[in-house]
Image 1: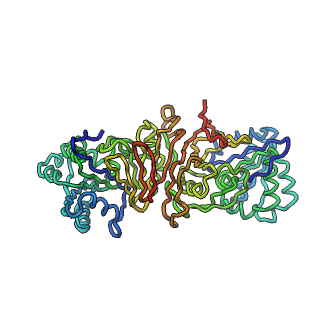
Image 2 (image 1 turned 120 degrees about the horizontal axis):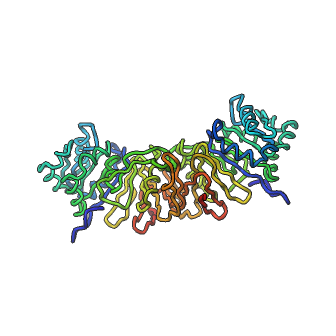
Image 3 (image 1 turned 90 degrees about the horizontal axis):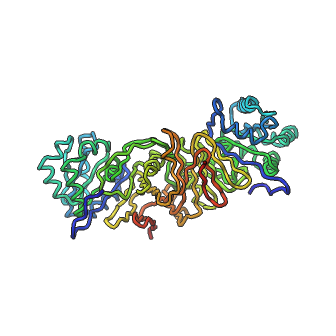
Amino acid sequence: MPSPPIAGKKRGFVVPIGGAEDKMHARVIHERFLKLSGKGEARIVIIPTASRLKDTGERYAALYKELGAGEAFHLPILRRSDCEKPEYLNLLETATGVFLTGGNQLRLTTIMGGTTLARNLRRLNAQGVHVAGTSAGAGFLSEHMIAGGSAGATPTQSGVILAPGLGLTNAVVIDQHFRQRDRLGRLLTALSYNPFAIGMGLDEDTAAFLGPNGVFEVVGSGGVTVVDPSTLEYSSMASAAPGQPVSLVGLKLHILTNGARFDTKSREAKIAG
Amino acid sequence: MPSPPIAGKKRGFVVPIGGAEDKMHARVIHERFLKLSGKGEARIVIIPTASRLKDTGERYAALYKELGAGEAFHLPILRRSDCEKPEYLNLLETATGVFLTGGNQLRLTTIMGGTTLARNLRRLNAQGVHVAGTSAGAGFLSEHMIAGGSAGATPTQSGVILAPGLGLTNAVVIDQHFRQRDRLGRLLTALSYNPFAIGMGLDEDTAAFLGPNGVFEVVGSGGVTVVDPSTLEYSSMASAAPGQPVSLVGLKLHILTNGARFDTKSREAKIAG
């Protein structure tokens, strides 16, 4: 569950990005996130923990400075003890926007899960700080995180590995590199266990800007595949054997592109223009 | 459109198979097709035209004999003139079941399209002869055939190549190797042009036995992905640029496994048991 709402404060946006977003040309997703976070007044904090590359944090900070951020820097959080360091926690408090890079989402959960940094990040989002993540960083944002699974369009029993994520939203289960890595089946499997959430499959270079009102807008060059299981009539997950395909009857499916919106509460899509 | 109905005759089944069906062990799909076609009284005619391998026809004929068919043989149709040969046309008239092998579906359309053999095969199916096809042979069965396209879960403008097929049914657009080759996007693209038909994505070793009443039953070890666009509220196909993702709002999605049925007229799924 997201951190409880704070009286008089509007929650910040939650912005999952499907990975491989444009960093060289139009950079529409980063531009949009920067604008949301205050543009020239923005203080963007990069958390590169998912990545094993040493310069990931610095490169994103440089990108945001180039785009005109008031300030942009990274917190080199490499181990759980880093998540308790007062200097990092103090810097995090100054953020108007936080960006989680790609890499391995299990690095994010195993290093940040249950720490003061994770708790504070949840509180800051509830207070209005915007939080974006790309690829592994996107998957980590939701309450139920896809940590791995099989490729392919058909859901199978045991076809997905779920783990608890940061929990900034429980309205959606997020998957990334969606078209590029053929992940509908594992997203359906994730939903088939307990079809309360909406499945959100993000293509590369595509983001969902999920606002405090529960509506998200698609930004980027790809599509967002939305699977709404609220009309599900039947799931055979309870009786399927491991590796076997799973029957699912009555799902709703939408493919949304740049500018389209989806209301996660009413579960209605609205096309741009 | 299928051949017109013939007074007093029930149409034969149309049986698309997703490819790579079990030919060694339980062989449930072939067993079922043989039983449907008369078992010990069956005369199975194999059309190996899609394949470039010389022994494909003989191997399927041997398989059906081994399973107990009254008779099984192949017609070595390699060029358009073969489709007018009286000896082949006469042999085709004796069939109780016709099986189209895998290979390249454009070999089927370019060699058989518009010939006497294709016309007669359509008439025979209307008279009660069952027709199965695997892989390329499956795609060929429907009126609108997927001849190629891009992999991935998101539909894109120009993401599919459609061609006219044999036309034994126009209730479904068929795609094969569905999970294995990540084909949801191209099936969605095919439907997005004109959402009158049902999308049928067949996994390998999985068949849909479509009866004359418009109901199909799933047989095999994989799943059948059914996309029902009858509730489609919006498609951006008309305005999308080539290669761009396409918005589709309001599709219905079902995954069906062995024993499940789907009524292509009422568009209702019925789970086994």
